[in-house]
Length: 363
Image (cartoon, helix red, strand yellow):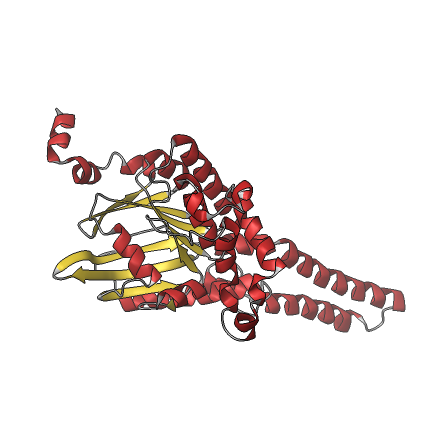
């Protein structure tokens, strides 16, 4: 699960540990029959590689053939060969039907590792050596009062601000100090508290700009082929997912805030991220709009396995979405737990409401 690193842990050793595990995970996810040892990744009780296991089955069959062939009739020899073939097929079937189990184990891989992240502004420490991890396919909520460093953390993760210290490792690769466009290309997208779409473009055109982002160089950029039917079709799919199909051809400048928030999510999804950073995407929405946004994000996480980190102050939304919550105060991580336990944590209550509230509650 997510955790603030233990005191004394070496950032370099932590980086190497999770970078190597992520590399093994990517190889196994793309090819479950890879010769990489499942034991090395911690996913199998057998001291064999997958390929070695298959070869072992063939070797057993060959041994049966060689040891039993002397003095046997042709029918007995054929029977031994059939046993060998069936054994090999059984192993192959086991690997094929067990593919989802390997993927299930890989879902526990840490997709994001932040070690000692520090950011200062003119002597003010906005982030003070913050460390945390996010597991792939999960939702992590970020809490904290104003000026706690939540948005600054997103700036450092998305490339809008360069950290003064620490490391950011995504999918086993260090991306510390990457520019925003490089961060987007590796698979991280984010939204902003203040939505700023292309106001004179329609909703679908706004999403098309993001869908075609990989074709902005070379002949495709000169010929404008990224504006084709396939791009529009994909943009419409994303608008349908966030519930904006009816507003697809309306100018973004004429859309109300609730629709603009959903358009912001669609534009972020258009880049094809594996990790989505949501910065108060439900701020200013009516309760019905908040419920609709929660349902959309739950569907994305459940159906696509999208990993989400969200900054949010709407408690009922966080309770419905996040499995873990990390709380910041004055740039420092002060608590991490389930949403149910976080709201009862004394350090969190004091951070939001002050010491007097704690004393009143105790009395």
